[in-house]
Image (cartoon, rainbow over all chains, first blue to last red; front, side, top):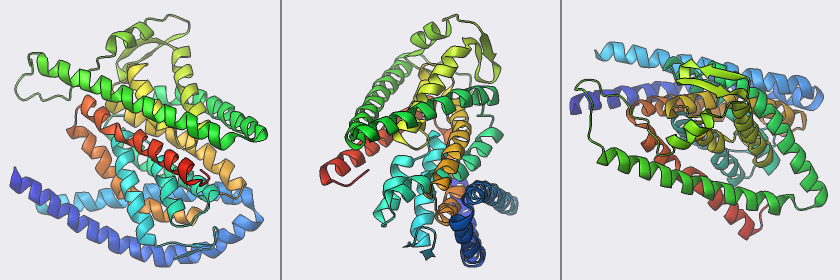
Length: 80
Length: 307
């Protein structure tokens, strides 16, 4: 039981490290390029900005959820 | 990191960590965590209007992830969720109108603060009492579990009253097979969701702190399903709120996107954790959350900051 818990924890920490690296890249690449465009929308087309904001947050949430699920499957597959 | 929309400098690591913590809470309890996220954003210098609007946007993303996870675990009653969405939107509009009335009367901050403290403390007190009674009842009762069928027990000492509410026969009566409810008046569901929406419009956030307990105790929905369905409901009400706040210029979506990166992983951990805890224990663990909200409101009242 303890060995199982330790294996799960190790897999989780490994996943967290990969996830952190991916997210860091995401911060500097995607958000950097998006910020100017979003600020422009926020100032000049506020309704489009509101809809884009909802679409972006849902899109990112689904994308990241798929990435974390894929990572979990990959790591579990390797640890078995 | 500079966020041009709100004109603020905030560490992305701080935002991701806050998102992670709120994600775990949301996945586990089915609440948006607005009474933690708002003050956490305010603490790093974001104006309250941006803190409230951005938090709503972040709640949408976090709830999508957690609800998807709960759906995969069979914890979402879609029929109930869609019916409740009708009442929630009506209630949210009435709540927002009450705020406008109080604004015009010039006493919005004091009234909302006092109401929120009373509500948060009442919810926590009731859930302590009910969960403790249920756990005591489970300890006293002889166990009848068959070896190898370790099911999560989801009993409530309030269940006799829940049955009385379900016995209230006002047409149309509907069944909720996913939640195990054979017949319940549509109006009871609409009323519960309307009250949830009213609190969301009046006190802000997703109002999961009142909707989730009402789903368990009034509608008789099993706790795990109440958590998942509540998250599904929050997606609808928070999307509505995000759109409304974004039009008023109160949403910095870049901050919400960064917070969501932490929430994505936190929500998965929270949702998976519900599988290891029985209903009364989840409800007991929920108790400190409204109390934290009450403490923050008391602090802001005493320190003179605007909430």
